[in-house]
Image 1 (cartoon, helix red, strand yellow):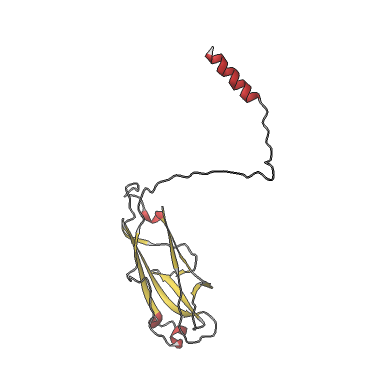
Image 2 (tube, one colour; image 1 turned 60 degrees about the vertical axis):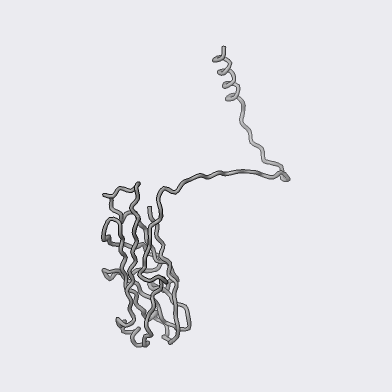
Length: 179
């Protein structure tokens, strides 16, 4: 008897036509969404070689910007470590778990500068001499399975505008997606 009653209730529920109505204009709509999750691994550590995370250029004559003198060049090394986790296979290629991008004000293929100096831009190249433009996805090399070393050269260059002496600065964000 219990089985047949359950079947009739199911048939009755499925046999009812479905309809939808719009709520009245003065009635408030209410909803609730609940999201849950957990952190399964800690973040990587990033070390830049400078506690202030800055790169300072020495005062440079304007003619050195035109001939791209090494005096207007600085090296930058970023060390990313402690990214191998218990859920990551140690044998896997860890370079495939990173997406790295330098983000900043673009000035053509270079990074733009702010300040009283004009006609100055920042050029970034990797160790193979490839130009890194704002928003470009970066390639990198691994030193070990738990340490990623990113090495770049930063060079002050003319932006194509009239050069004027003065102070300058740029803020460039390194975006790292680790998965």
